[in-house]
Amino acid sequence: MRDKLTISSKVYLFIIFFILYAPIFYLIYYSFNSGGTMNNFDSFTLDWYKELFGDTRLLIIVLNTFVIALLSALFSTIIGVLGAIGIHSVRKRQTQNTLLSFNNVLIVSPDVIIGASFLILLTMAGIKLGFYSVLLSHIAFCIPIVVLMVLPKLKEMSPSLIDAAKDLGASQWQVLTKVIIPYITPGIFAGFFMALTYSFDDFAVTFFVTGNGFSTLSVEIYSLARRGISLNINALSTLLFIFTMLLVVGYYFIAQRGNTRGLGVRK
Image (tube, rainbow, N blue to C red):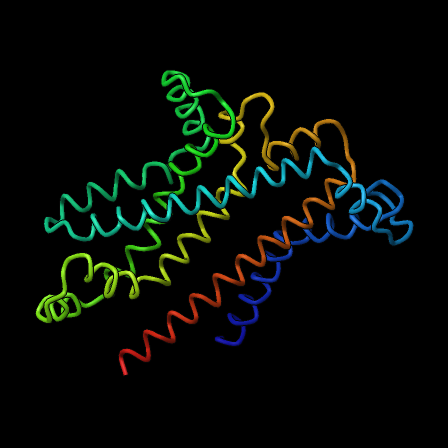
């Protein structure tokens, strides 16, 4: 019976992963098609990648997307770490749960509502739609993600570490920089990479707060796809998929390194 369940579960997982990844690999496969369509594969070519790298406007959009993603991940990580430490330091359980509920609102809310809310807020504040509006919006919805990635590491940390540091004469700043931050470093890196990925891939919120003359890859790919099928979209999507996979692999190794350090400390 167990063997049957094991086989059925493996078949189920294979079907799920096939449904998820088959369209992606189909897209990647035709990014090397010289025929210019996604119907018949004529011959192997790199012309679509050459055309992609020869498009100056698109390269500027790629640069804008990377800058937005890196800056939003950096600022949201700093704010999110401080927020997670603040929530963890709250003594009352009810107050802590309330703060966590407010933190999770941006995660569980639909992207359309979040995007429209940011658009109204930025318009009322007199902030011109463009680079800064996109950056502020991305920082805002990335902060809760960082908080959720850092909080578990704070809860794993034994209070005796902080008490021992204070008994040895460490100041509040030294406790933060010498004890807390090193211990939660895996969570910080995980939050940074998650924020980077969310910012890089976001479309719905960015679509609302992007102004004329400024665009990101997600919005640009959407506009290109509406004009018709062009295999340079496949080439661009292939490069984005590879970049995302590299982020996932980097996060995996950082998480494994953090777990190894944790086991070493326990021993």
